[in-house]
Image (cartoon, rainbow, N blue to C red; front, top):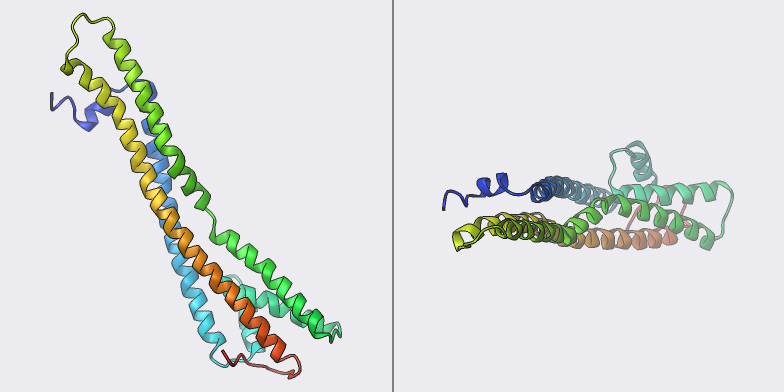
Length: 233
């Protein structure tokens, strides 16, 4: 009886529908782990790039030099650097049009940074919805496999005159494996989703703070011209 209740034996002897459910859950679990590792490495890269640019930004380098570097490294830059480049690009375009009103210049730069911020946040949040779906749906898919397996097991027992625990246990155990696989797929996805959501909120707050600080710098340096430098943090 112990040998017959091994996990491999239960999976191989389950009904076709239960096996299909198990296969689906295993595939979802593999895709979920792949998404988790991609998001983990992506968030680490975003944090590293943002911290590197923030150090350069507050190091005393002129805004024009920072903008030239950001424009040159646009493809490999982090979210904070691209947001800065968007604000500086719009700010300079408005000044080239001989617009001298401080409010118009700041509003234009802020709108450009907000649009860039939303684009960057959409990229950072990619795959989160997939993890949320896996975490919420997988247990129910596994439960469906379990219910179907139990129904199939009891249907097979209907023709037997004598039913013992030894005859009932294998069919029920086969069905319960589906629920176990569903939980195995769901739990890591839920844990990863909560962790990533927290990390993304911190990244978003940092980017919003940078937008406000950079807007204040532009406002202070509007009358200075030339190569203004970030100061007074």
